[in-house]
Structures are given as structure tokens and as C-alpha cells.
Amino acid sequence: MIAIVDYKAGNLTSVQRALEFLGHQSEITDRAERIVAADRVILPGVGAAGATMENLRALGLVEVLRDDVARAGKPFLGICIGIQVLLDRSEEDDAACLGIIAGRVVRYPRSVDGRPLKVPQIGWNRVRQTRPHRVFAGVPDNTHFYFVNSYYPVPDDPSIAIAASDYGVAFTAAIARDNVLATQFHLEKSGAAGLKLLDNFCRLGC
Image (cartoon, rainbow, N blue to C red; front, top):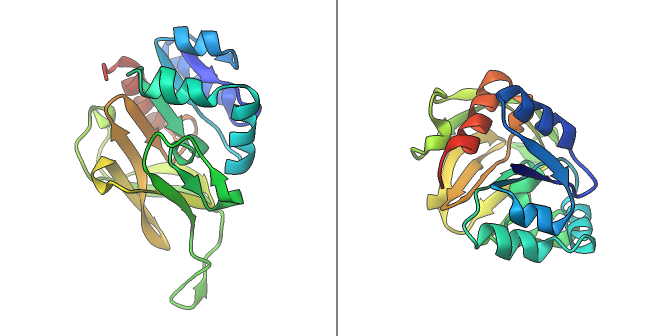
């Protein structure tokens, strides 16, 4: 069973429908015991870092995700805001995050070469695979994925990045470290390529 973390926001049902389409059983839950008992955990969604962390704290899920999932070796996938809150701190709301991955989350620049940059970034961006990883099996390099973001992750250790993209600046689009995977783009909104990555996560042993 795959647990989809219900933190009272985000595209929870979209992710669950994608998993059902792929033939994987899942449940949307905010219960710590169900998350701990799951074979895999997905933290999906949209929203602000501050509100996300506030809801996770109110639900008593911060330590669960940090200790009983990530540090315990359970396969863990973060999507969109789910990649950002893995890091130590976000400029958005000056939010203290989960601290599973050392690093920070910063805002896209307001302008590039004197021209305003539209933020949030909304739309399809080409993703470069910067390091081989099994989650990209069957997905060609430079495939387009769907992004909706105003901020992007900057991990302290650049070697954990497995993909990058560009929007005003080059930025980390996906990371992998041991059992923890995360993407800045929305797998559930990225067509066949997004579904392939989601299926790969559900099948690979971390």
C-alpha cells in the first residue's frame, strides 16, 4: 500500500487517480500509524511552504516523515511543494522545513537581463537528466514536464540532483538520495512521462 500524505492541501486525488490508473493501491491519509505501516509514502501537492509545514506540525507528521519514513529507509517521494519542504528552510514565509535534505529553497529572480520574469512559473519545461537514476528508466532525456512554482530547491550537496531545468536560472528539478526521491515538477500532470516516473518509483527498490 502507498500512503499519500493528507496535509489538507494539494493535488491528493490527482495523484491517487494516477496511481490507480497505473494499477497501484494507495490511500490518502493523515494518520501517522497508516503512514508508518505503508510500503511507500508520497508527499504531493501545491501550496505555500509555511502553510504546509504548519499543517504537518498540527497533524503530528513532521517527526513521522523525518524519522519513521525518510531516516527509516522507506521509499519516499516528494512532488512540487513536497521537494521544497524536504530541505532545511524556505524563503517562502521564512519557513523552517523538514530538514531531511540539507539546503534551502529560494525564489525565482524577479528579472533576467533587465527583463521581468513572470513568477510563478506555470507550464511545460524541458528537464535534463544530470545523473543516471532508475526512476528515469524509459524516459528520454530533455523530456518536458509540467511545473507550477515560485520557488526552487538548492540542496547543499549538488551531487544529489538527478535532473535540472531552466527558468530565468538553471535550477534543480529532481533529487535522489538513498530512499528519498523528489521532483519540482508535477508527475501527475505531466502526461505519459510523468506517469512513467511515478510507476518507476512504485516499482523500484530503494
